[in-house]
Length: 383
Ligand SMILES: *Cc1c(COP(=O)(O)O)cnc(C)c1O
Image (cartoon, rainbow, N blue to C red; front, side, top):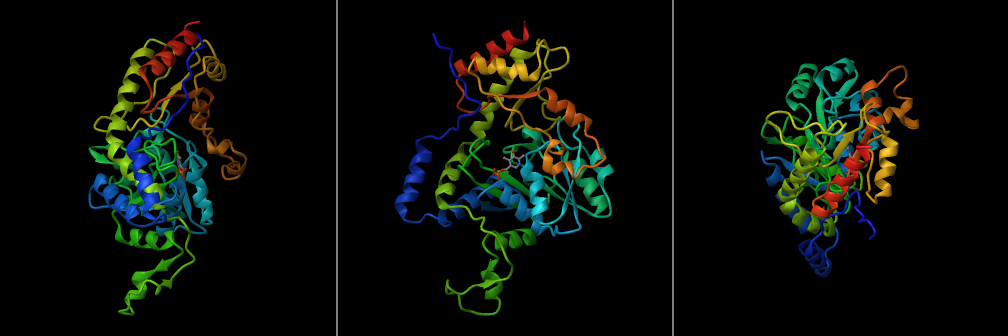
């Protein structure tokens, strides 16, 4: 019998998503409209705390809008973990500012406040915590550090829906603004999409304007009573970052399933952890006491005592038709970002990268698929 195939990820798109998208296509309204508005309202309710939610076409767009609204520009420094996807740092360059990469805490794979504190200079403006794999950064400590130094916080929450820190969802938990991703393999999806969340009305207003060409109907309306839709003003050279109603229709359904998705991933993680407890492996860091992990990713590390290298491990899983991934090659190792790190070292991220591997973990994973992954990992590590 041919061994089964387990992809690294398979999205969970049900009949409800297909029906919602079909309805949108039949409605004749495709671009930003009532579905995007409803998605924003539901998302803001879901996060709670009276936040505003702005639907955009990617988390990268949300991060860019967030930094722009926080006043980041040339001459500013923004503190970013080296262990992240390049989008976190690239938006800093979009605005002509300088990303300052910092090493991770090896125990959490997240930014820690002490390391961030050492990177603060008079030019620092924003800290960008990445809730890596869905584990919350210590937002209490980072907020205190930011306040003590007059800095803002923009969370990269691309992995962190739903993640809680001390009972609060990331999104209303110490950051000035938070960016979520609905990319195809994130914890919920609109194909491509993102959401900027903030409790600060000025950030929301600026991001709302910049999201769509710098068009500001509200500013114009201060000077006129006319509300005809063809009357608008342009107050800045904005961007084209709005979300389509087609995507939002999918998002509305996926958001309703988000807690179920999270519970299913947590159960899969518990099963992996039990099955691997006796193996020569470093299991993924769990949440801090009082926090909740979204389990976007399940990342193993192969220590020195493992019988094979990380690369050989990936090859062995591939032979068993199991998809894996690596999150991430740290930014300071990348050609472009090297120039921003002259003379600095990142020993924790380097050590982590040499031994990390992400296993399949997704809502639609069947028990048989997980059994095959578990049996293969056990076989490969027992030789
Ligand atoms: C996926 C991801 C992004 C970018 O999200 P998009 O929606 O694809 O723009 C940013 N940061 C991290 C950590 C991510 O994993």
